[in-house]
Image (cartoon, rainbow, N blue to C red; front, side, top):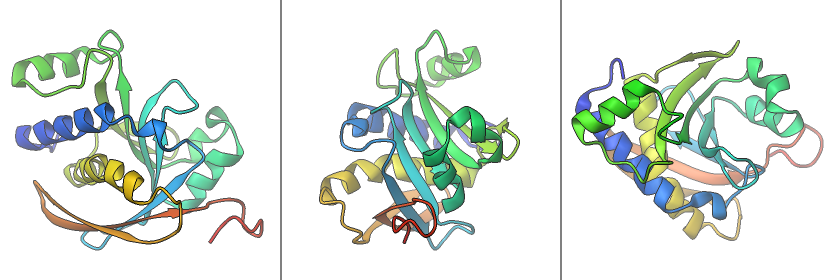
Length: 192
């Protein structure tokens, strides 16, 4: 995992296993968006989408901007993927997972939720350029994997109230604010 320490990788795998076991795709679909703000990280806000309710891929995508999220709602992934920037995790079957990831899980004893829940984390840049997440990106993803299931329970009414969370990870303490947002087309009455 590049710049990521073995300890941070272990923590990420634990968060991914917990997220998968809680089946958040049963509570939220691809058409719903959670805005995430973190004062300790430059960039953002990020726009989170839980995958798995309507499509076969289970996981979590954090869009770098609202426009990227808006594009995803208006067109098929194949048509707009070249214009997206995301940090994401997809859960894969052991047979589909990269052999080096399976070996790393075995070597380090990383936790997974089951043989069909190998977490593949990645960063996608504009032009469909994929790479492993940097340490801070993986930390943000890990924090979201831990806190989003709780947010889904607390914010079941889908009102745009802000819910604050603190997360202590390998790179320090982060304060995250989450809320539901609509990301429809500008002027459609759906965006905020």
